[in-house]
Image (cartoon, rainbow, N blue to C red; front, side, top):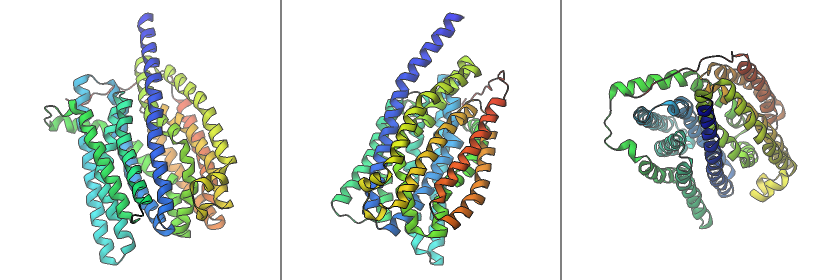
Length: 439
């Protein structure tokens, strides 16, 4: 028995080392190309159009967040516990769910576009159509990469993301340097085309899933129930939490106008230098945490998560400090004079530390997700929304955009304390739930 446990520990650690490094590479690819795309768009588009694009793109990211929390996160957590046949059936069901969600988004954006056209809101017509154009390939590509993560094919996920985000940045750069038209619909069409190319790669990478695929309605219904049972609180919490985390953009737009949205997002986006840490943790660690919990137990999983938090906190804090100390210089490097101001530099500095707090809170959230205890996550997001609605609205109305990152620090502190208490208060002997999927 001891030898068997030692073999399991060695296997998990080896996989963590190999795939953990690949996860950082993957998130570096995504973050690097996304960052380049954003900087080019900020320089290319005029301030008001860029502000509207940011708001529309945040809607697309909202749907992606809901898809991951409701559908693909369940695949990451539960899929690692399934046998080959069950896993393949479950994966196919998850892809069908993602496609169905994406198609529903396309229909909704079409209806919204018709509504905006009929009531004369022409300023929102093109951005809404743009989201509809990009939604299907964007969401399906994200599903492919999440499934590759579950099967520990992180390098394959990185290759897929290189195609998607690299092509996206390359096309934007080409139009920027050749003086192309900075039209919002053009940008969303680029997102759609690059995602579609990556989807073609994803079909090849996951070709064994599609070999001889026949849809079994009972299996799909069973998998939908499994996914919903796992993701209902998590997705509801993400819905609420997205408003708390990203609502500042919309709140600033509503209270202060689209040009200030552009300034706030331009400043805060520089902190996406930290994205490889954030996204590698949220994409890779839940899969490993679930695997360790299933194989070694709750105590081993919590100890492992604690070690990851300690190891990653120092480099994250050092980079955050570097951003904070050189905030004005960074704005000058990445943007033109429109975004190089003392106010935006201060926003960038504060935003870096709010992200550090959020990064540390994520380790606690991952422990709860791996244990399939998602209700506290929902409650924490509800708390976040209440604090956002009261605190952020009042402070932004009074102080302007500088209040947004300050409020975020206060909110992260409160929900972090609540989630830590929820994780620690659970009985250490709590049984790991078992699920079956597919059929």
